[in-house]
Image (cartoon, rainbow, N blue to C red):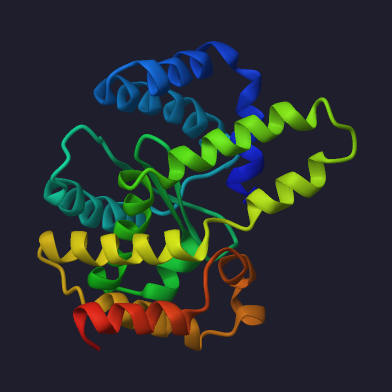
Length: 233
């Protein structure tokens, strides 16, 4: 699966919808900004979806949609409309596009098995990136960098590589906290957040395709320690 930094940066080529969103972000109301973020995220989602020649199995998609629906119902900010999709990619990962488009890959679903509580935390973590504005800020950064790199030869690869490393340590930890909070609000076991991270920690990166997940997230020990302090082991 292509990294979201390069995908979103490529959307700088669609200037009309981007310009409307940037204008509303700086000069419009917060509600207008969220609406335009959703419109722009929808364009990104169409391009993202088009990269897959098949869909994930129905049973996986149903599992994701059921957990996602409960999480969305528990979300206090009704201005965000979330869509949850399982995708047939070889990497163990999950993603969030601006506007509430959340993706989780088949290998990660297989790793989690039938534990809906752990799945809820993973989806809630990605929702947290949207609700806390992380996905929006990443999109803006990648778009601006894309514009800059067109004018400065030789810098494109370096800057895009920086984007592809994912969110900062603190943003990931904030999303963990929000994911556990959302899971608890939706009636899931918040302690499953720690279980999910321990499951990922114990899994060999080289054997399961977890390299991408490890490269874009803080060390599991940091995340587990922070969550245990807040919700218990």
